Image (cartoon, rainbow, N blue to C red):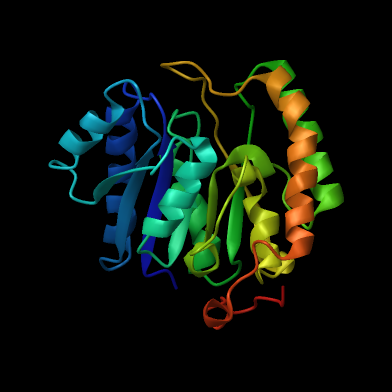
Length: 257
């Protein structure tokens, strides 16, 4: 049973999306909490040194939304740094990661949480239905998913969705490099997560309303394979392995690394 959820949203120059993002996450999670006898939640908005007023806006909104916790990456480190900062600050037993661009629906968070709360799975990952991305980016993403599944243990269809519910105890103390946020699922498998307790959940996907996408298809195509191979090498070398003290905190059903 889930006791507390930490929603982690990496943020860079998303000031136009932040008010709606914060309000929709709060409304969704307050409804979730009310249905479950007051179980708790928090929203960790991880700012990556935005050059727009994103951080200042988050700090203002925190006065209105008491479960909003704005934090800032120690150095500019992209989406991967947002994941690492969120994992380090999360106080929940379950973490939900999602982008801040509102292409994923905050209202779908309970869909990801339900199999974990019921004890059926330990990790759920979103399959973005009817994706609202350029065809080139979708093609590169699908190729990337095929390569991840071929080279790593990653039993999901859309590893690049970044909309995932996962056990916090396996993410704590995790050091991520380059674009390791794309490989969090195989990294957690290496840390002891049983692949049989990982599942896909269909979720909605919307066009971006404000701002520009941070993803460039050509750059992703050129850098993706070398990054994947370097991550695979680190996995084999045990770079991401749990420390002995943390190994005892694995979720029920977890397998050895």
